[in-house]
Image 1: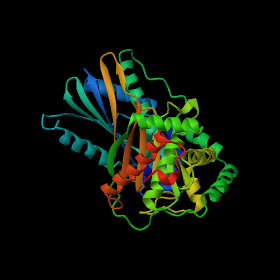
Image 2 (image 1 turned 90 degrees about the horizontal axis):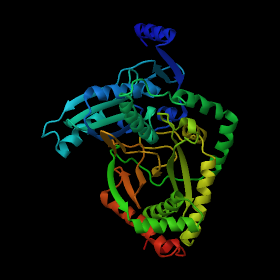
Image 3 (image 1 turned 30 degrees about the horizontal axis):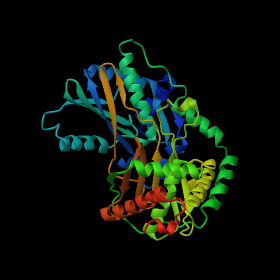
Image 4 (image 1 turned 135 degrees about the vertical axis):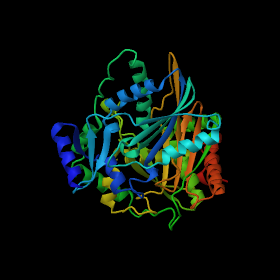
Length: 443
């Protein structure tokens, strides 16, 4: 660090203008256990909000300032240190916002998508911060698109729901005056609490479980798959099929997640020709009420290993998967520590432990309606990925939305279409009979 910067940092720390904190376990994952560098755009969480109401630019700035004041991560940057990176949190910061009035040509869907993509892809300066940006695109006096790109080091899926709720509350608060209430637990305080929980003895105990659980596991595929470009395909599971899956879960005394995972593992086994299947699934890590209002990267990753037995009945398969899933969740540990314990070092074409992500999204991503305005949130992908294949499901009324994420250097569109066909075939089998054997579900 240059002498001038070192002196400025010393002045900040002595005056209270900034504070230093160790990285949290999830943040360390990005620096120590990821197949891509922290500055890569795959670490950008991208979304946009359609906002309807007579809201001025000044209203936007005032509301965003209240949110920035409430959440320390929106004032956070990453400081390189001799023993590893540190969180640098400033006491105050202005909102990182830009405004643009869209012409008729710029409002065309393809033009708007291109502009949002540029916001999503623009690199963050991890040292200078902030690690988010907001661009307000105005289509009409009462119609704006608020584009948000935020680095994974300070956010996860749950945080997006917190952000929307707080931004709306901040706008309403502007008519009353005063700040938003302080969060019950700040993100650095949550990190300190997690470090207190995960003492060496507990880490070693959980690592022992995982060494046994993952012993002898093989990768689903090998070899270089080219650039980490991500393709996103969206489909749906019909309400009648979803109802059949829920009924199967009830009969097997399992969760919807375990039942869907069973179907996915069966489909993936048929698709790859391998019966030993490992996927990684995210967990919110927000069981304590005190952290439910906190913005920050709290989520963890749990590997789930399943042995697909083609001669087993479907209902029995769900029970086996559910028991293994509950056991795995009970022994969940910080992913960065698991990677170190297993010695599975990340590489540019090698995500540690798993190649496939499977998720049933259940974090709160609310739409908001209040007198004078309404907000609808839309997720977007950045176009890069840390894994090769993903299947993300979200409850959508009585059905399920399915988002397929894949690297075209590894798979073609027809490959994914075949995997989806197999997956839907298994789930449809749940509607016909839970006494079908696994081998008959994908034919």
